[in-house]
Length: 303
Image (cartoon, rainbow, N blue to C red; front, side, top):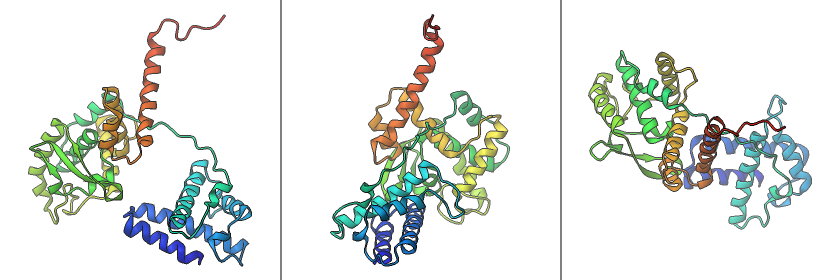
């Protein structure tokens, strides 16, 4: 019974919710770990409805360590408890459980780190860097598009030629949960995309993917990450660059420029406004920094 309902839930994620492969793999790991712990400690347990406080404490204990018995962070433990709680909520919705056993225990406190961003000077150095090869020009176009639109790297590599409309300066994106959204792109990104589309034929295209590797195939997220890091090094950007940092920079610059939080949420494809609100905290950190530097009594020592 434990394995059957777990499989049913994973099929629900995969085929009905259309969750990403990463999400399904993560939830599979959590449920496998849970079932393994329960089978070991409580071999006579046959139904999820039988879970009590003692069972949940065993599960929580197991979630604190990986397979090598290394202690995991609070973030990892909280994530796994959240995934398990989502499974129980599904069973409740299906009428197979009445209460959520995760409510019997307390999740650890999670420290949420502010996202790291690039300064505008670093962005300018990156996007204005000279490109000597068609590959560097492709990667520079990718960087420009990421900063211009705030796309996730997974969304970027999934773009086809039909997803961009340079006449109206927009891109159609299939985001998490297969949700579609339209995102505007800036004029500089449009110009670089036009130039790249001319060069694209030199990649000997094998499919309709917008961005191609040297074999003419669709690029992987890992390849984009590695190439952007190389591009930033060549441009003299000191900080380590990854695609998500450009997404964070996009959101932060919009909010600092006075953009509406709901509009930024829509462009980022966040289903929950709370995910977007973290950028308001980052913006406030910027305001505090300006205040501390500029106000005459901001740092006055107390007598």
